[in-house]
Length: 336
Image (cartoon, rainbow, N blue to C red):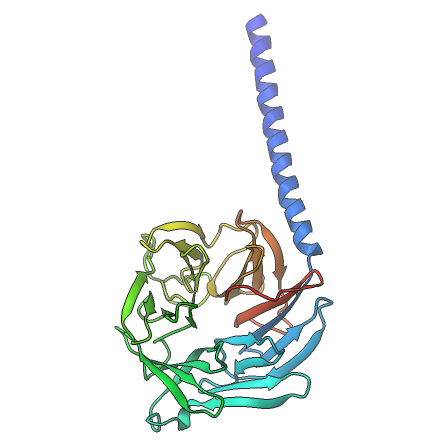
């Protein structure tokens, strides 16, 4: 009888502990969701399916917008101008106050490009005021001056050449090297100024089979973005690999977020990344469908700090974004 009593008592204690742990877990999840809902962000984003690039204020209203075609890169410059593309071959800088075009580059008319299929998937305003433009189809990085003259020309190594898949985002590093995502190869390569490959990382499939498509059902290693972190590691968005990974110079995967790691969110084609000054990471969640947010900000503990979902003004092809302010404070720096 005493033994039976103690058994019942232990069972009640186990059930009570389980209920308590469940309640704490639900409370933490609810608190995280509530915290994300109280955060405000000012940002720029672009979605080719809606033919829109727009700056969204912290109040949720559109501050500036412009019609676009296909787009895979964008930047709000320190002077407030917007550097973006409105076709696969045309990059332009626009003053959003006047909507005037103050600089542009057209790949179709560049020397040697006539009659070729060229696509641009990356560009960047450099510290010397030149603009880096990366041409897929020619497999080259250009540095173009303010007058449109080519100041530098760097060849790229491409194993599976294709005008649409040679590259995704490319960034010039503070060392003078270039960090390039090769979508078709599934490889991130670092080039020195002569075009020599000095580092590369082949994005793994993590033991899974490739699957066709663009949404949550697809799978592959078609990397979109790579950021060299201050600690020397590289943060990579794996595209249709549905995640982000941080790898060391030796190629060791030391931190990651995969498709179903975030509560109540499923990642699809993970595109642009932004590492904010405090260490949080903005993730572009493209082709994930209206059940999921298009933009997600997480901390290093993989907690969702802020999310954006708007399938009225933006659609299922929101590829690129940049946070400009956070809770009323300008974001003046960050890695993208």
